[in-house]
Image (cartoon, rainbow, N blue to C red):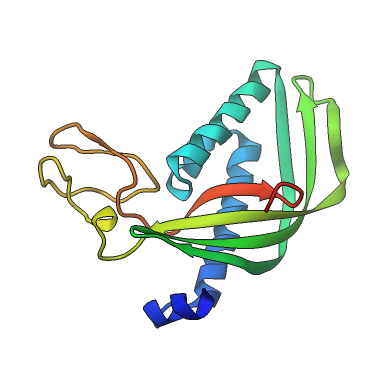
Length: 182
């Protein structure tokens, strides 16, 4: 799959892709910890963004905050490459460590640790529209107006139509823990 991908994209840079993975991982950890989830919008598909927003709202409903600080990505390993008619997906295994704790409204730690770093390993799938396919077209299929690319849903400024899966570069589409990844 890797050879086929490289054959289709001879200009693809694995170091640049890994840098994007690391940047996305760190940005999402920071947005989560600060409860500024709108900052994550351009980095995730709609489905993943809404899932994370749901969990952030659940924490808030119980007056809890999950904090993740001193995050360090120690390794990124290629796990899988998938392709269909419109999209490409690269799944990587991210090894990292961080301080990870949950606190209540008074600041009392109710889970995790503020002082003992926790090692984690997660599988992150990154998705993008294949350049040149209908999914990657920069125009609204309803009215033909130019679209602004994002990580998922776009609303056409001309006709107001909601478009899902428009042209976009690599965005996180799925995150799974070691024990759930198959």
